[in-house]
Image 1 (cartoon, rainbow, N blue to C red):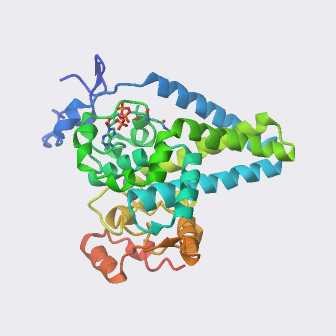
Image 2 (tube, protein in one colour):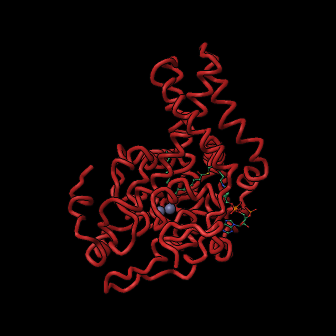
Image 3 (cartoon, rainbow, N blue to C red):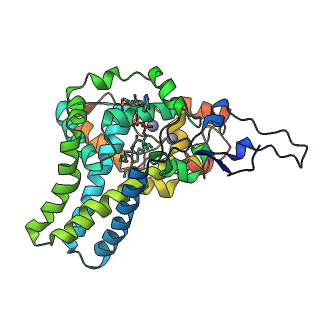
Length: 336
Ligand code: ST9
Ligand code: ZN
Ligand code: ZN
């Protein structure tokens, strides 16, 4: 067997493929599908993502130095709106059905979601349902056992593992496909997305005298790249480094600094243990969970309803049964 990392044609072998012959330790268990991992690089995506990130760094520079303060403020506003389109929309409402939303909120969240350009909700939720059902296997689109880079962005730069397509049929998407708003978003995505994610953020700041150049790089490019990267941190960092107060047998972790920037989605050990909770956290401290504040506000005006959560009793039992013992630090002692 060739050594680790050696390529053979378009194949790259993983550490799990290598048997350590110098020790008596048993060879690692190799998932059968790991042998079929193939990095079919999509160069178009590599070039686009690379260029986008160079533009994002330049946009960050303009954000900090040259842009009008109103333009920078608008970029932050767009970050919150597009973030909510992912957290309150694609994630908690559509992928997990953790609450229900009336028509005006569904329309608003679809607009916010399109502003985030993370592909149509139906596709996002399909991949996310796979992520929960087949977590940390080859049928998980951003399988974090393949390392930080793959879980963060690498998975968007290569063809999907055959297991994803093979097991995809086990995911029921009928609820999403029967929603006319989501069908409309998917059908017209290639028109709606450029208008909402790039053209609108570039145009609005010109109303207060900003240059098109600054507006484009700050509000369209930098804001988009920033939201992408903080979202990806949930797939990468929040599956790698942190405490596991609710279930020590899974990889997702609680990671507070990430939660702050991802509007409350960093309590990932809790979320993978209780994915139906609309808070995606045990407590939902508003400062660390803006999405909960948003959904609670929508519930107060009647636009959101049937908010699902988990009783303290169920959480306590689970913590005792499968937690890693860190709960006093991460849970009830962490008062709001
Ligand atoms: C982006 C998404 O960035 C980020 C998602 C992050 C998720 C985070 C979750 C964490 C929790 C929430 C926290 C939120 C925090 C937010 C904070 C905000 C402040 N099941 O995909 P294709 C089949 S997007 C079943 O082309 P390839 C299906 O038949 C960024 N079947 O695979 C499909 O056909 P169709 C912008 C599946 O060819 C066919 O395969 N977007 C499934 O291998 C082909 O599918 C991009 O950059 C499935 N799951 O290509 C686009 N999947 O679709 C990047 C596929 O017609 N993507 N099938 O039904 C691509 O270019 C390609 O997908 C590819 C793979 C090259 C990666
Ligand atoms: Zn996850
Ligand atoms: Zn989830």
